[in-house]
Image 1 (cartoon, rainbow, N blue to C red):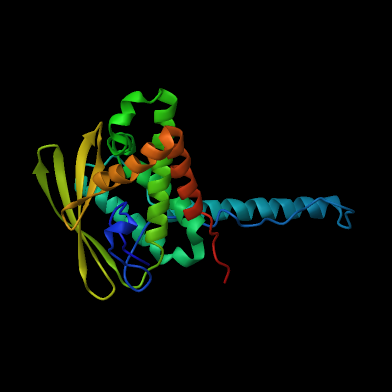
Image 2: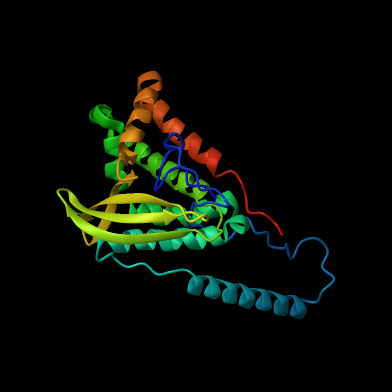
Length: 259
């Protein structure tokens, strides 16, 4: 697993934590599992037997769903910024430990809802787009926001892909003019710590991440704004929307591995 960028960090930030180093993000069970077919062709089994088989299959499926529900964490409104970041880290570690089995697409499925629940995606998308946001239609804004959320989730699923003893630790929290700053570190498998800070803002009953700073200085939003400016200049708003979705699709195209 790799730590190219913390939080939503970009490849150009140059911090690496792949497999034997560090990187994390959440993902659920394999969404591509195949179920056997039944009731097709010529039946050589009596109806009572078929009914029994169906009942057993339904019961088995119910048990599997119950176990899956028990294994997934429950989420409540975060009481502090540290709670939000810790919840994100807990999910990332869980996903990392099952990363190979889940595959890229499986990790994305598990990570995306947590990213959308933990980050202020709408605000980050608006700030990343910059002045062009004012010229966009409501439909375009919604498409950019959705594409931005998918893209960030896909980056996390790609970066946090496996586990080899890495640690994700929230260290402290302090007030900031715009909210609070949550300090944390990602400790690579070789023991090297990487500082990752989160700017948090209150949104209703929850604290949401509005920016991420690698080594306390490199802003995720500023990095995205520079990246998006070039796309907007060359391809326009529709080009940005297409690019966000294309990149997200490319990062989530790998299915779970079979063992």
